[in-house]
Image 1 (tube, rainbow, N blue to C red):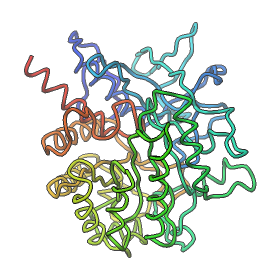
Image 2: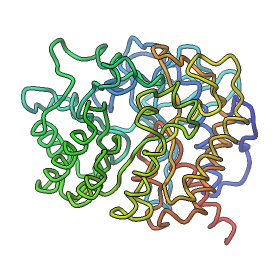
Image 3: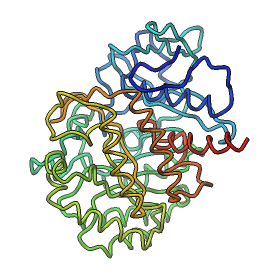
Image 4: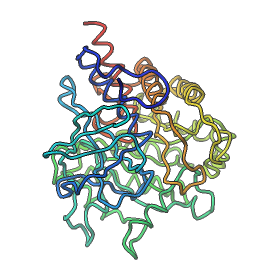
Length: 431
C-alpha cells in the first residue's frame, strides 16, 4: 500500500528495504502527492507561535482558503548523509485533499483514510521573524523563510506587465498581495529597508545560508537590473549578509554589460526565467516576455555564462503548462505528454550550459490559466527523470549536493529532490 494517489509507478511504502534511498524516495513520493493535491487541516489550533507560517505575499499556494493559520512546510524525513538536512513539502491547503494533518498528543501525523495510511511528520519550529520591527514594519512582511536555510525577499510585489495588461497568465502576485497587505502598504520596498531586513533576519538565525530576490518587473529592464546591482553590493558590505549565497531572478537587461556588473557586485547565481521554450505558448502565457523575445532571453542566458560560469546560470520552466496549447483552462491534461515536452526543453537548455529548473504550477483560481489537475505520479516520474538529466549534465558540482541552495530549501518544487534521488542512487549502486 503506497502514499501515491495518482497515475504512474510509486515506491512501495511498506517495502522492507530501509536504506537512505528508499526513505528519500518514499518522502519525495509523498511530497509530490502533497504538492499536487494539498492537505486538509481540520484539527484544533496548532501551536502557531512556534511555527513558520504561510505567507501569501508572492503566490497563493492553497487551493482553498483556511480559516486558521497554516504552517509553511512539513518535514517529511531527514537525511543522515546530507548532515541531517530535511526533505520538506510546502503546505497547500485543500479542504478536499486525501491527506489530513492531525495533531495527537503533541505529535503531527499525516493520515490518509482512503489508503488506510498514517505516518509521522514534523512541523519545524523555526523562526518566521514575526514580532521583530524594521522601519516601522513587522520583519515577517519583508522577509520570508523559504525552507530550512533560505530567506526570500520580494523587492516589488507589483509588475509593469500587470499595469500594461500583459501579465503572465500563471501569475497571481498582485491579487495575493492585495489580499494580505495592510491598507497603504506600498508595493515596492526601498533598498535600505530590504538591506536592513535581510541583515536583521540573517543575524537573528545563524542557520540562514542563502537569500533569493524575486518579484515584479519594473518598466525599464536595465533599471531593474541596476536595482539588483546596488542591492547585492549593499548585502556584501554588511557583516550578517556578506557571506550569504545570493540569487536574483529577473528579466535580462537590454545592455548585457549589466550582467557582468551583477557578478562584480557579488551575486552568486542569476535566473532569467523563460517559462517555456514554445514561442506560441509564450505569446499566450507571457505576452510581455514574448515581446521581449525568447531568442533575446536565450542570448542573455548564454552571455551570463561568461561572468558567472557553468552551474551558476539558471532558467525556470513552469511544470504543468508546457503541453498546453494556450492560456485557457485546459480541458485535458496528461502527465506523460507534459513530462515528455518539458524534459525535451530542459535537455536543450542543459546542452547550452544553462541549468534548467522548474516551478510546480499552482493557482487559487485567480489567474487566466486556472486550476490544472496535476498528477502526483506524473510529477514523481518527472522529478526522477529531471534529476537524472541534470545529474548527468555535469553542470552542478556534486559537492553542492543540490541543484540550488540545499535539499531543505524551496519546498514548493522538487528539482532538488530529483537531484537527491539521482545522487543517492549512485551510492546505492556502488554499495
